[in-house]
Image 1: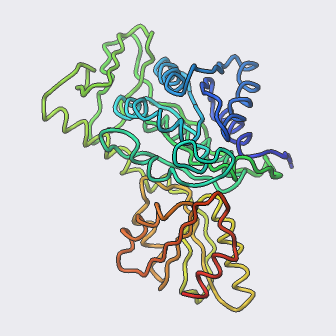
Image 2: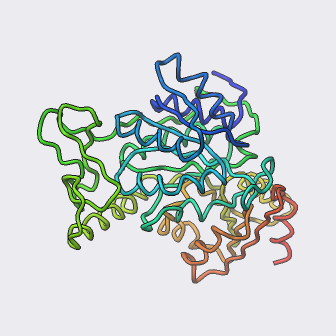
Length: 373
């Protein structure tokens, strides 16, 4: 047994180190700054690099450059910083640059309330870049998740050569809990597929059958090209409609086709239940508590906790929701993810209730919605 008392931001930092992260750049912002502080403690003794950019745009740019040079890179921010990251996120998606981005969400819009939690960035994380390419977004519920999902985020970023988001929340990230590190389910660490150095290298040599190209870092013996413009397999800018179409279809397929392998979730299914709460993030804790209290009152309510939000695991959700009459979706926004549930479960009665006032969604509120429905 290896007990540690830590908060979510510390767990994200330790998870990053476990996954092999050796580069961090960021800019101080509440409530993500303690990730920066922790990485400043963890990386230099391991010959890693931790630095502060002059702003958020520079910080994520440092991370992209480090990743292109072969480092495993991570950055962390909150809502205002995520907005500034958008152009570079598009670069990472279109040029297949691995990167882990932590968004410790706080109440918005704009500066909002820096010390109040929310889940107001959920839709933005998926649609934050030009081009409409799919994003991978993982959502931790507690400190244990913060550690484990960070390792998964790095693995997915490396395997699919793409940016991966961790959609944390001020309440998850700054809550301290005791975690038994010896009991965590840590996956084997993965690294991006490598090309053979010293030979002619085509940086985007991939197709629908092999959707992820092999990687060589800038500075290798082989010539390595990178561009943020539409390109062919050799990295040269192109206006050829067929080449552009093939690349766009591949970039879309490589993420969507793997969703079954990285659908992370938790569930509490009760017999004879007709009601299912579909939830994520810190609200999942209130949902479980509400369901348990209702069970003690004789009402059977099941809970499905989604930890992979994007791409939406559609078939998985349909399968899990098949036997239920009512679907309840509570969240700390005005119904952003409920729209996806309504779309996926168009034959079900989906009830969305959102709360965006800086306060947690509490079990009594969830019980009230269920009992009065």
